[in-house]
Image 1 (tube, one colour):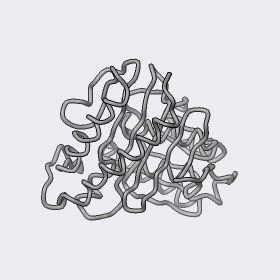
Image 2 (image 1 turned 45 degrees about the vertical axis):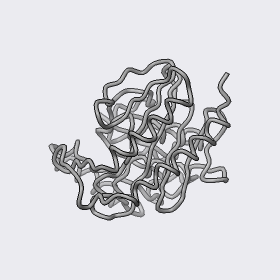
Image 3 (image 1 turned 90 degrees about the vertical axis):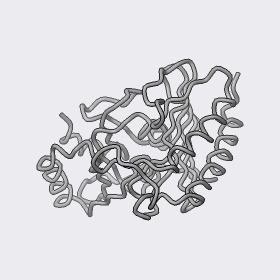
Image 4 (image 1 turned 60 degrees about the horizontal axis):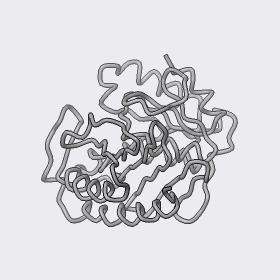
Length: 259
């Protein structure tokens, strides 16, 4: 039987070691375009290569689902690692220091470990199913705000919304006019963690991949929060979709944007 506490300690060590690649390579002058506003760098490839191989050794027979190098369509098996080697690659390319490694472990069809590491601030967000969520060595909880008017909302505007500009800015205008403000960082995994620890009261972004939100979903839920998709349903392990995460009261307020 797997000891998840021991496994998480090893995951933290491996993620922190792999994150050194963020600083060793030069992403600003070494990247490719996968699509409009969609970058990939040697950092992405190297982190996935190094960390992915080490993760597979932790659990015999486990599988890797990851963003780069033909791993994005891998099957979900009894134990599957879901890895985004760099969530916030556009930030990395532009030297905007808000990029993270995001990781989840799925046991059959359920996320049992979530981990997101921000190497720029040495912040390790993590959760084990039923064991609560933590930031470094301290337990975290979602915001206790109950009114949208008093809330701070993170809003993602990733490439998947390029064809819905008017709709996106209509949503942002509503949030801007009815809250304390909007924040936009550009890393869904990190912003979900901010909604888990109360820096945001909620976070909303459409058209994400499983590796963007799998780890963050467990962290938010174990911090006492809610994560739903853009149809108003509880997020599971679907490969692609939108998410609204954070304080249940504020998430409920943002259901007006589901469809």
